[in-house]
Length: 84
Image: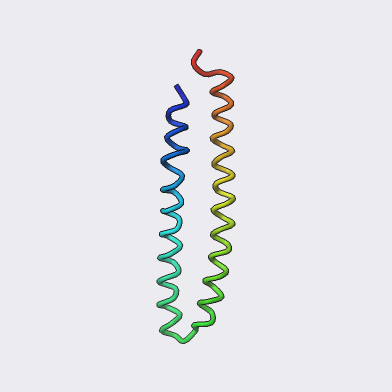
């Protein structure tokens, strides 16, 4: 009863969640580049770019570990108490 939604979340939701997160990061970087380029702060943009890339990579790793842990807990409950 609980397994199909879990499989759907693991195989369908996670790749699109990563794409969604990457699109947000891209738009933040793109508009910050336009804002800083027009004001001559191009070195500040490159610092922000590398800092945000490393921070977003760490954030995606932490989110994936956290989400996998939640799915694992539900899967253990399914194994213990599922299907009657």
